[in-house]
Length: 205
Image 1 (spheres, one colour):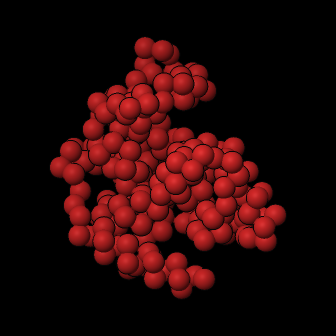
Image 2 (cartoon, one colour):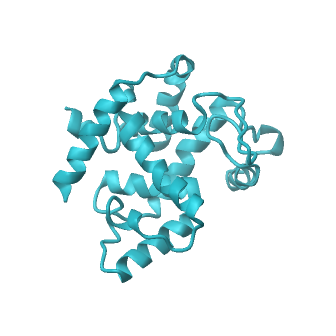
Image 3 (spheres, helix red, strand yellow):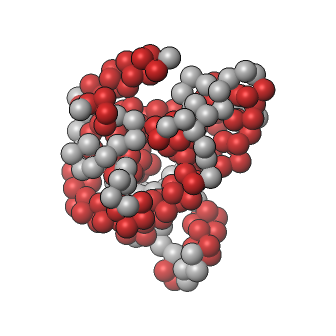
């Protein structure tokens, strides 16, 4: 199965290379690199975070979705409030539309999710992390349990955990399953000159 995943990744890498990084991204490159290294260390998956921001907002710091998610990281107001409370950030400094706040919170929240998830390798673990970022950590655990009950490997996301739905609506399930694939296999390859990716680096080198 690993060769099938690698083949799929290679195909998506070429698709990503045919696209381009939005001009707005470049002014945030240095800050994202600094923040990612501060939160994740020197092995921070900077390309993954950059791809995630492209997916979330297209690097538009003032973006507001139809459901009210705000900023480059598209944090819902309730999630932003909870996250700021967790880190003892005052209400006045809880600013989803502030690019620095958005990038730092995105990196921190991803790390918080990542630490609670187990998988066979970094790529699969990051895929589950992104699924949790998009739809909630609780759903990741429920999906892993359901996958195990069906004889699938709960430590592998692609073609295993991603195949099962523990109860989401059809629309939410489709969005959640598209989310990690778009980030890791469509956009991540664009940003490999910025830093490491989670699923494409080894394939491209």
